[in-house]
Image (spheres, helix red, strand yellow):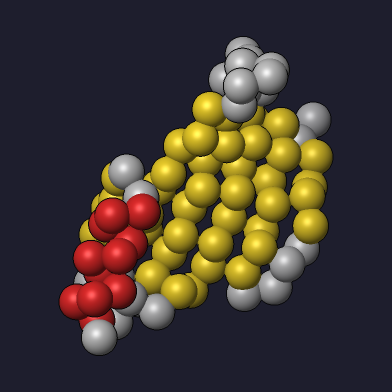
Length: 82
């Protein structure tokens, strides 16, 4: 099961880093078509590929972080960055 999850995550996400405990942090970048900004999705998993956290970071066209949306384990909604 772990290997199936890992293959699925590697297929869905463009980049990843291995953590000290054997887990991974996966990254996916999505470019906004309308405003030139982007979103970066970060999914952290443990050594068994179980999701620990999932966060969406929103950047404007100047590559400045404008919002963070923590979605998992608890959806905290969008938090504006000043």
